[in-house]
Amino acid sequence: MADSGSEASGTAEGSLAEEFAVPPQVEEVRGRMAEFAERHAGAGRRVVLITSGGTKVPLESRTVRFLDNFSSGRRGASSAEYFLDAGYAVIFLHRHRSLYPYTRLYAGINLLDALATEGGAEGGSARVLVDQTALPNITTVLQRYQAVKAAGLLLPVEFSTLSDYLHLLKAAAQALSSIGSKAMFYLAAAVSDFYIPASEMPEHKIQSSNGPLQISMKMVPKMLSPLVCDWAPGAFIISFKLETDAGILLARARRALDTYRHQAVVANVLDSRRGYVAVVTSGDTRELRLSEEEVQCGVEIEQRIVATLVAAHHTFMAQA
Amino acid sequence: MADSGSEASGTAEGSLAEEFAVPPQVEEVRGRMAEFAERHAGAGRRVVLITSGGTKVPLESRTVRFLDNFSSGRRGASSAEYFLDAGYAVIFLHRHRSLYPYTRLYAGINLLDALATEGGAEGGSARVLVDQTALPNITTVLQRYQAVKAAGLLLPVEFSTLSDYLHLLKAAAQALSSIGSKAMFYLAAAVSDFYIPASEMPEHKIQSSNGPLQISMKMVPKMLSPLVCDWAPGAFIISFKLETDAGILLARARRALDTYRHQAVVANVLDSRRGYVAVVTSGDTRELRLSEEEVQCGVEIEQRIVATLVAAHHTFMAQA
Image (cartoon, rainbow over the protein chains, first blue to last red):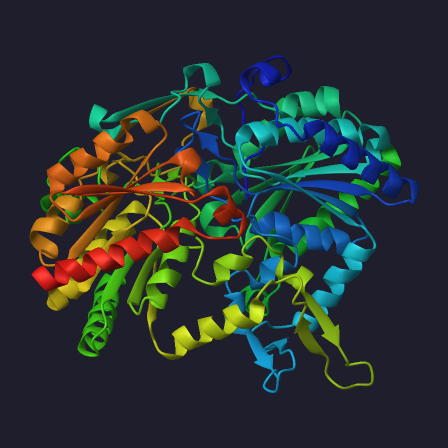
């Protein structure tokens, strides 16, 4: 659910470390991602980096207020499951507390409404059981989750702010560079296009007694350009474009592809995003659409998106 | 964790319906809150309305981007538990997906990491059990949650946007007006001080290709003034003040109290909010502070805040 590649250009690489604070864990995370990628590529697997969720953009350095982007992380989390089903190893770079693969299926449910105690009346310790009507398909989902975890196929990495995201994306690209065309970037996160440079940010909470608020935000440098050209030139790279106006969608997706020369744009409209997307590549626009019946039966559009991209990645690798 | 009453004034009542869209469910929710308050007050209980979590302020009418306030809802959710322990009935007006009483204790844990299947090997259906080391104190917490639920002592109401919040707060005040001094308002939500009027909001997603972003936000009318004077004049009303600068904290809390003439301000500083607050009333400033040992043992400052306010509410009712 996202807009990973917009049209404006910027001097991404030069300004990254100057304008955006480096998160302390970035070196350690880069090492874990590189080890993960090499291990799985060595075992013949492809590796996808999925970005998911919105980015926080602080308005104050001791942050009380921030700008955010609409995103529950649903598209990224469900896509991760379909990539795992397709045999990929997945690095899941997601917003803290956004939806998570498998667990997302129970996100709207209060855990305590789904539990019951058993026994414990005569001094023995009580057992706590799951009410399986409250958590549909829980045994199947739990077994799949446990199998993925035991096989080490899912590496979660968290971000909160735009700064965290930008540095971790660069680190991921560097970590995946050694596996070349076996790497896919599936940039579904809803990344802010705007930010306030640290040098222009007030330290303390903005006081409402000072009157109406004027916020002036700079444009975020576009990471897609250095990602495609410098950081991961051999990889299969997918950006996302979300619009609210269907009339401009395909033209903007095509323009992003022309600008960045990556492999595909997944284009979608806010109101219809669960039932329709267009996968735009240099030679083709493939529209994916769920029927009413499919939606009723719980079919997810991410299954179609992932199947389309897995096939395209296969072709890409054969040509690489 | 919040700032429910700031200093600026505004024509709250007049502009509310004009400038902020009325959420469709507001009448139905008002009815449920009124029934809840009357039932519990009739049974001799006091009723507290707790507001909790941050408010979303959309930047576009088909919203992709929004301004948000730092708040996990932790203070509101934990306070709800202590008010329930003190015998109050609780209306919990909280941000969608913010922390929830009792469930909050397990918020950082992936549900699927805490479950295991048992049986099911020979065609029987498997049972799903909770690993009690993964969910500390789960039997005690679950029993308390179930008892509160069975007694109907907790009424949850959700909001997402600033508009939802403002209308639901007004509805809550109207719903509680019939129980007079038995009602407490504990306004812990982190409410935005700024918003963009619907008439000035772009319909579609702001395009980054248009260059840097200038946002001009109006000040939100202060609801504390009509709440105290018009909507709930007999109630015991507590606002919160969060600052990042400790040097201005107590003066601002005192100023809010002088301006709105309600019963107390709970003042806190962002960095120390879990270990220190000041409860400021017209005659007194009481500082509550946890020791290192208390923090280590899991004592929560909300227990002290609630105990202080429950006692003050008792005195207030006796004088009413």
